[in-house]
Image (cartoon, rainbow, N blue to C red; front, side, top):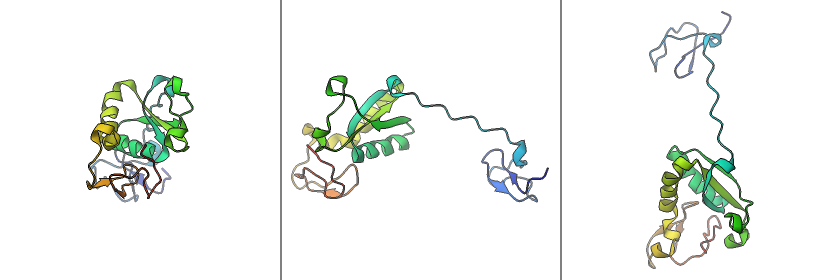
Length: 159
C-alpha cells in the first residue's frame, strides 16, 4: 500500500507507518484505503414532518438549540415565516426582530418542551422573580435586574 500513514478503524485517529495498534482503542491499525466507509448521516426531516417547540428571536433560538444539542435532541432551526393563524409569531412581539422556529421530531417533542420550559421558565408570568432576585439572560447569560424588559448584553426583549 502506498499510504503515508495508518488509521484506527474505531476512532479514525492517524498514526505513523511504524505503529501497529491504536494507543487509545487498542485495535490493529489499517491503511486508509482499507477503512469501511462511514455511513452517511441520517437526513433530518423537513419541517412538515416535525413539531415546533418555540418561535423567538435569534438569541432565544440559539439558547434553546444549545440546550437541545447538549441533551442529544436533533432539531432544525429556520426562519419562521408562518402567519399567526398557522402557529407563527409576528416579529412585532419581539420588537421587530426576525423570528426563528425550533422544530423537533414528534417523538422528542415532550423532552424538548421540558428543556424549553426549564430554560424560559422565568419569562412566564407565574414564574416572575421578585425584585432583588438574581437573574441571568437565557440567551447570553448576562446578569439582569428583575424588572428589565430588555437584556443590556444582547438586546433580547422580555415582553
